[in-house]
Image 1 (tube, one colour):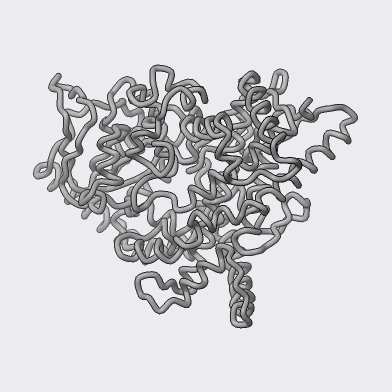
Image 2 (tube, rainbow, N blue to C red):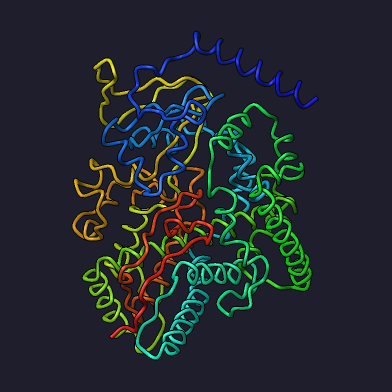
Length: 542
């Protein structure tokens, strides 16, 4: 039966391919990198890249829109870094709705979190976004700063204790692990008043599983997995959900078993928390954490914002994963870059010390954090230079024409200022390539340089993205809803850590690579099985 079904799917795909080959817009004249694999094309190169800069390198050779050789069973794929094309895809009035997340990626989001804002489209997406938006407004985010402060100070105390045990003034720490614990503890408290216990070294099963769920699921992408992903676009979502969530396939895809167990544990905990919180709300509790806001959307009589219990659990799971990954990874990479550039680190510490001298022992406010130019420049530059997500995936619902900010040259030698693309093209929106486009960021775009944010007003024409003209938080109606939360947590944690500690690279330290596990995670080359690692020498600040 399964064999016959596979034969029918293969026959359908082949027939569809032949028909469209001779009837659709052609991308054959578009330049692009060569392919080493007939099975996985050069898509696998994007997933296997350990530098985080492949899109930027391809951009310098083939231009800001290029043809990719997709995996088998996929007809057309392009990689886009052009600002005008990205604006058209993500933010264009009347055009953005024609570009959906590629259907096979719905399945991945659904697997990780369920029916969340990252796995739905159209009116359902609008309803989800409206339901959770109140949790991430400006005043709601600013109200969380005391919790951020408390967790940051606890992390500093833990590091002080470790250094004291070393009987010196420094210790080599895996900062990635510690910051991940701090980010998860923070989100647990501000989202649903839950203690993950990471920094207290009393971790729950969920806090042990969350930091590696993306690594276990996407850490080692193979050609076979990309082919499977390609086939998913032809399979009904209901069947995909059964296969990924319930079918006996863990022997073939062991990462599926890991994420299933994590989901089961997170759903159990979240449902218990929801029951407890609803009881408290019925007794008059008006706690305004993220869960409180989202639960009020569940009680809403407005059909344009009401969420079901399953959707509420899915949203909390998604926000837990996204919130922890964004802040933890970005801060880890910021410390890595500052360790490489001690002169920038010293200037930042001086800026923080000057700001602290005006506070008379009080904690920084959001206004204080916003008023530190170099602190915010370092954060923006880290978000630019090492985006958490390297690629965002879209597919056009109709034949369309992408506008270009600058002409590209086709194989034939013809120069074009717009590019027709056929319906169903897989569009790899390369965040790194856009964030390192020399036309936008200067000839030193490939260099970590916070000074660029102090020398020029890059936000004066902030036409793309949620923050600082960057694509790091995506853009438009599907842009990251929690970007303010992430930025404020970065401001808080980075200022506390740099004020109290100095960071340096270990002498003869291991080679750190940027592993693309859907999130850009620091790994030691040859030690992927040990998960995220970034060892730094941490010393008490003078």
